[in-house]
Length: 85
Image 1 (cartoon, one colour):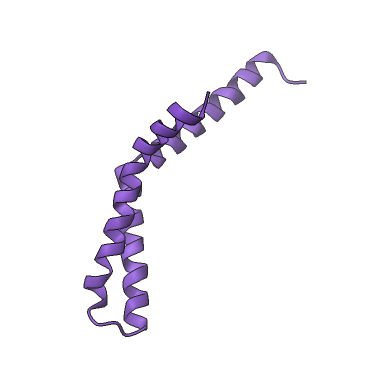
Image 2 (cartoon, rainbow, N blue to C red):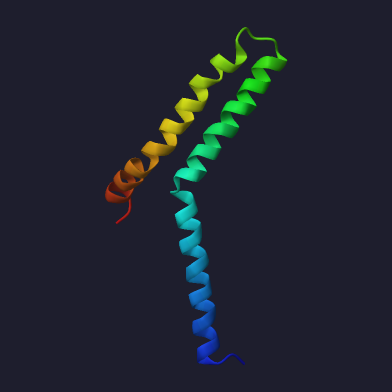
């Protein structure tokens, strides 16, 4: 049987993990990496199907993805305000 101290320690460890996950979710590093990987994946795909100037054309979807990740916190706040009571 767990002691109260052990239970508190488990809760504190869980809280640290949750805080770390939240920090990662809102970090600039994550957003930059997602944009970079999006750009590389789309650029590679466009290159493979022989689209003219694939690396230039891959910029638009990568930027659109970056914009969508930057606007999500705003829409989350709206959603919480109107749909969660």
